[in-house]
Image 1 (cartoon, helix red, strand yellow):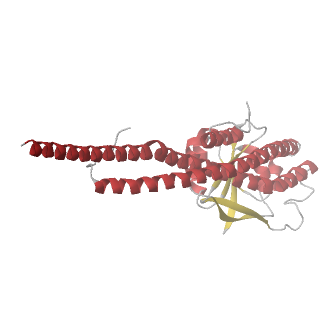
Image 2: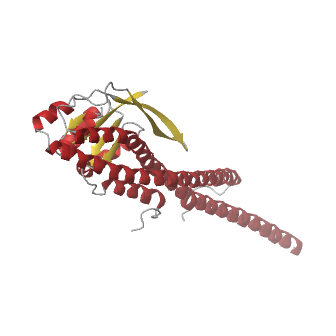
Length: 104
Length: 209
């Protein structure tokens, strides 16, 4: 199966990926991002979402964990605020109950 | 632990013993599955963490570079230059099974572009070339991160579910069955003793007469 890639984000940060050949969908806030995600979830297999939009949508994004596709993954826009690591950390704590990687 | 509400008969005892054997076997199998899933999970988790660190570092570099490029190019020109990509990236998507969990497996396919960049060199400064090039180079890594992180999340969920099953068997089902079996055994023994005593009494009375 051939999948398509998309990036959802705000402003300039997504433009550079447009030039690199990824489909871009602008969304200025989390409400808009949620609508966009609903719309494109069936069509695109890999969706990048900028961190500041992903953070308020954490609950919404959980529904994508049921099936292998689409893959929704957060990326930093500018410098990272640590959201991606938090996601990993949560998964680890749920599965193992202990911290084996982050040691904070 | 509450025992099951059953009649203390030999039939029930036999049935319950069968169920206990199945439960113990199932518990062992699930526990083994859980152990192996956790082992694989830790490997994938380490991978995901490394990838995320790399992607975040490189991406912030790319974006910094890009914002420099933007700041020295008039915004109108930048919009037009960047909005016509000459290349389309696609991904070959399939699934692979990790301990019975279908996780995504993605391979990036890139169609070669003719000249490398989606705009004429006269339009845009060199910083932009650099940032676009770097963004393209980063894509395979981002895709790898996407699939690894998804695998982490899916596995975590499955491990949690499995753990709940193991615990339900270990702390509810098995003790319950054991207690009920013990109860039925006690009851049957008691009945037997009662019968023996009754016989002895009857015999005693018969001899006394």
